[in-house]
Length: 231
Image (cartoon, rainbow, N blue to C red):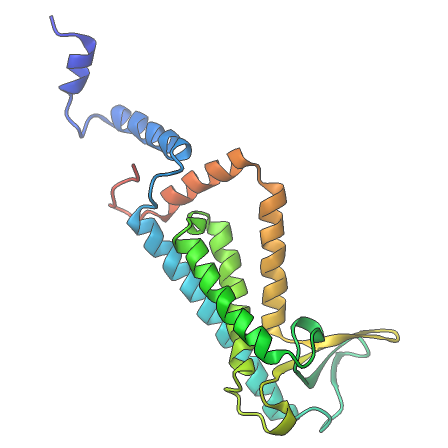
């Protein structure tokens, strides 16, 4: 009389729907427990295209708006601000030789070097050190990278601004409340802030178990139809 283990080992690999369902649930538990398992290639490709797509899309939006606004309003000081909401929200061209929101004036080349290192670090973190397992982190880093590249384009003087404006970052969003005017900024700066907020939310709002469950769920959702499930 065959033992239970022998009978189970003789079952066909493509068993009944019930057997397949049980195997699927076990696969999910193993994926959550085995954090050292490599990211399945279909998931990795999906994350890669998501990251690259977000980066290029938002970088393109930043560069297009800068070009359009500077063509319409000219260099700083040529025209007065154009108010969208009178005395609160407007459009005004400015060139920033510093970092985010005007900090670190005159250190543009330093920030350019830091930006290049940051992009390389993000790519390594996502696709070598497994950050891309999380769709939340992939999305956040896509926003951050789009913002970094948008401002890096300006810091490398690819916009070809003349004179003292060479290598400066083009800003155009104007916020004012009463006597206080916030330093002009652009879409790239906004992307950096939103990405940083998403990272903070991920760090402080997700426990280790929640992150593991999210990774397992992300792996399943990213698998294309017909692809084999992750081990």
